Amino acid sequence: MNRVSTNDGTRATTGLAIIAAEPLRRGRPRNVELRAAVLQAATDLALAGGTGTVSIDAIAKRAAVSRTTIYKWWPSAAAIVLEGLLAAMRGSIVPPTGSDTRGALDHQLRALNDILSDSTTGPLFRSVIGAASSNGEVATALLDQWLLPRRAAVTAVLLVGVAAGELRPDLDVEVAVDALFSPAYYRLVFAMPPLDEAALTQLLDTVWRGARAPDPAD
Image (tube, rainbow, N blue to C red; front, side, top):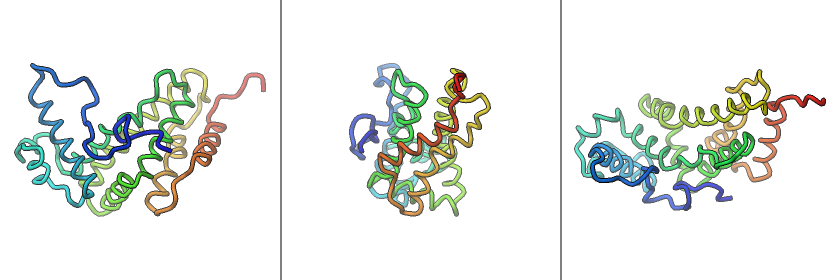
């Protein structure tokens, strides 16, 4: 499979680059460097030992910053971990240049499946989802730092498709997002085999048939 990596180009799961933008230059705020160090530390700790090993103290020690500095920007360790993971995996929600609507959805669908079926990131997200059921801080972080940004990226693709006339004008975008991306999470949570290449194609085909705009010739 290996269509998307956890670092936009490699399959490695440690030492992830958190800042995907241009390298830091002289004169850029020190806060940018500190935030990057904190996000990197949290991501590395989570990937190495799971979320249970990540605490504010552990992050502060690894990033060589104070707890006070961390609490200025984040309410919990879970929020840091999930923001870091989203940043490290940003390429999974950014459509390839020149993609049409279907191509962008195909990229996002397969990328998420790769992340959740990976032997390191899959169990990590399963543990986060499990913890969210009883921990309000984890639940909030999961929603704000992972699920909502990813949904927003997919929603933007679908809305562009509607505006371009590729998708039907009355499309229920929320339902389309759920239909496409819920299966990967469902299979992860219940420890079922991930969707294979053929199943992913069939899933996209099925949703696409219901979402595309009617052909004027029909």
